[in-house]
Length: 118
Length: 319
Image 1 (cartoon, rainbow over the protein chains, first blue to last red):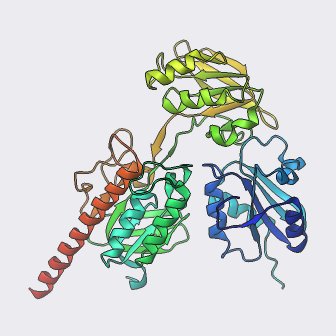
Image 2 (image 1 turned 120 degrees about the horizontal axis):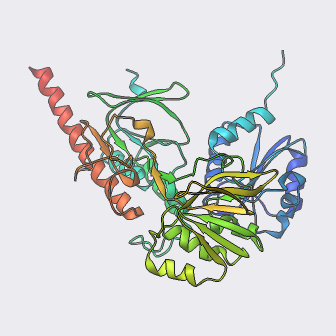
């Protein structure tokens, strides 16, 4: 298991449940390595700011992570973590390897923008 | 001056040096703020296992970072991570720091502990293929290259040792190095030379990365002749050292030719009330323990300066 402070997804069924029950979901699929840990840290810090988004991690070496590793959107990815942004159960965006806080925020703001009623 | 945003000391950087400074300063009941452009822990969080930190038999860098952060907070230290600094004024008794969102903080003393980061080549295609063939971490991404041909750039211990470890996965590893000799220890060079899967291209560097969905080839430039050759490869691992995160300082403090902050034995820079600690300072050895030591000295020197400043202000008011 990943020892982050994020909610952990242990199985493909967990992930399916998370994306069916939540409109906006970010899943970081990685290991406890130098390219992944900064992304977990950024997600942990953004949880309070983006309360309309559910943040999860999933262990890359867990065989159940095939649900992420087999996505067409990650074809060509050769660096962990694979970070997947789901909107209404569908993949809205996927990134490979380390990302900065600004890069993550830009995706969250674009893909999970909060619509304000006029 | 907004009193809520005024601190006795502001620490820039939240690696082991910055967090230690935060622990010492806040425990001395000095109002302290740590700001960091990265996550708390700095490069320490990247260490899988720390087995030589005195008093702790074995701990991950991530766990040690969390403990240090918690410890600093428990003494009342404010910590703001993943922020961007847009302005910094280190002159005078009151230093000013402005974040990208416009928030301004003031402090009477500043400790600079911004640490360092992996050096990149900065050539065409490097950003585009990061995570799609280009990697800076063999243990993270090595298994994506099982049975594939890759290149490793660099000539230090990291490059040579990681090249050997990558042969567990890759069918062929070509080391590209800018000089005609390696900087790595002799035993690391010998081990790489003994490995049948490793080839060497010396006095050369990568000039560009190419591909469509993922990396497919690199341009290798011979630094002696200037000749450029396209070389097919599935991956590129880059280990060309570290650079200090000191660009934001400009000429506000003295830096050496490598951009490292010059300090004296009290970790003081040439600017009054400004100290520096950790990997961004000019020094020979960079370890968590040396960063902790630097942070301690900088905090104690800063506390002493703050005390003197207070006395000086009192005397001025009495006169």
